[in-house]
Amino acid sequence: MIQKPTLDAEMTDIRVRESMTRINNNFAGNPLNKGSFEFFAFTFTNTTGAVVNYTDYPLPHGLKFTPKDVIQTSLIGDAWVWKNAKFTDTDVVVSVQVAANSTTAVRAFIGRYEEGLL
Image 1 (cartoon, rainbow, N blue to C red):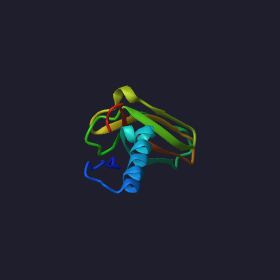
Image 2: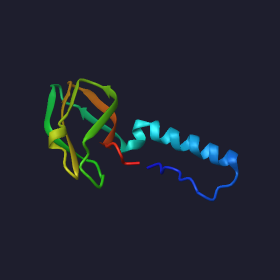
Image 3: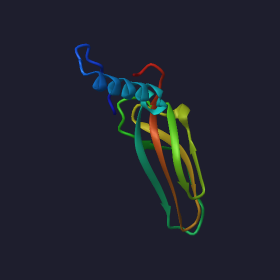
Image 4: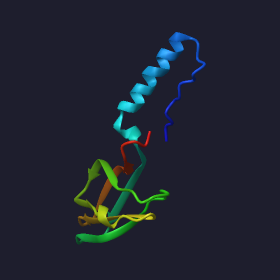
């Protein structure tokens, strides 16, 4: 995770101090810096001649907390539903539908957004 720069009280160079102030303001204004997110890509491949449904399927995330938020950036394929209420400290839970002889893939940032983390 990106760490917020700190201003040193003994920083005497006014240009450096102003630059650091602008950087701090940029960090404070970026919502993604107010959380802890990791990028994930998941793929389900179906080689059968029929549609396959995965209901309440756990996917390990490796985070050290229970995620609350998903920022999905891509979905290729049929259907993908995030089951946020069933997320745990080890898994995110999804329901996925994969068409016959097809692939369903998703890319997402998974984590937790909270005001005041910075």
